[in-house]
Image (tube, rainbow over all chains, first blue to last red; front, top):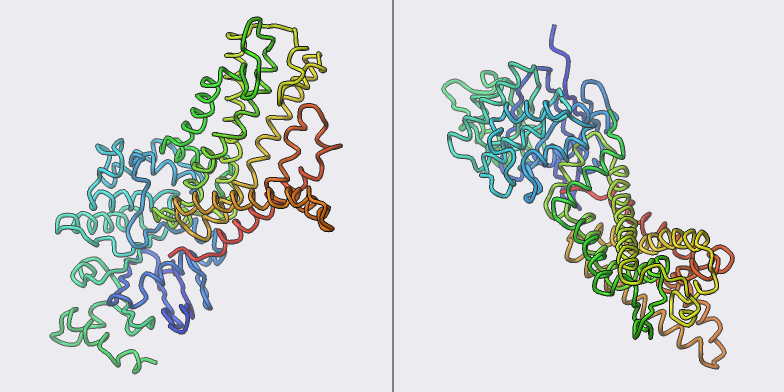
Length: 243
Length: 287
């Protein structure tokens, strides 16, 4: 029996003027999966994330999170970072979490400490965020995404701008969240190597259209690397064939 | 679990406090009272030239209300409002708030409430500063006949009962807070359009100053003998500035019997500006 769906997206579309950025997109992410959302720059990954989180309005389509379609109730089940975490630079890391926790329905101080410990930010929690490195902000971003105990994490390019050590830290953290807390993760990136190491399933998007979906074994041709598979599926004209 | 509105207000307050702006508004009001002698010597007063100073505590408080509401407080509060309404747009933190299980209308309400409460609290604090300073500088003189012609506070000469004066002082505090509502609402609307704290501050100021000039022009027109002068005078009262006419009435007159038009105008502008600001806040995409 297959696992129940954590996220179900059907017929999702959004246009900016005449340009259709996301075009009748369908996605199904099973509970406990780490789903890699792959696509070149401008393919519609971030717009899809924003649509799922309700940050922008959808022209058509449906989003269900654990069967729930009410936007506010959906957001209670989701934690997310879209296009890099943004914080109040003049507040400390823990004060930023306190502010965001209030918007998540409240959170005890011990839970905040726990989250800071989880992302290894406890030592610097009292410092203003403006003094943090990019990697520290990403880790704090993951901590804020976990406020309110979500069941589904949406991470938009969480390794962007990080050095190899930072990338490994984030990767390990995502795996830990799946393995220890049983979370489902939808992670978008154009870093093929990262997703290859991390994801149980991968969906590839090009020009707002999903061009392929499956495990890496299912997607790759014999002797093909993920990179060449990605280039094959996202080459000009590939989308037209799908349509 | 839907976050309680009070929790959201506390979070907004934490941000304003972190910026140091909330304290700055209150601090400026208190400093102003100190600079003007705690309301013991309001501008235009011929008093204070020689002893005995006939001001008592409540007179000092009344003078403080006028001083707090007009010159510094409005600007300081507008500065805070620009940051509260627009900073989340410019920092990109609005996306971090909107991914939470809370409706956008609730976020808007928390921001508006924090601003209105800060407006009231800072006027109240200015009032308290004036009362303390007034007591220190002037003592408890009850010889109020001498202040009959002094602007703002002269009505107190004919109102010897402390209880009545305190009630009117309290109504002045509420009226002073209400007076700020249209400007705060306008700032929410400008923030929704410009999404920038600087543009919000200057945009709101420009619109308010523009409204003031319309008021001046219509008032001047209303004093001419032209056929339309009556209409112009009537319209002047319906500008944002003109609708403030109910504020001085918290003293000598009664707001509801004499200043209902201005009160309705102020409330109307508040509802319209906050309503439009809310519509933009709720409907616009966060990109």
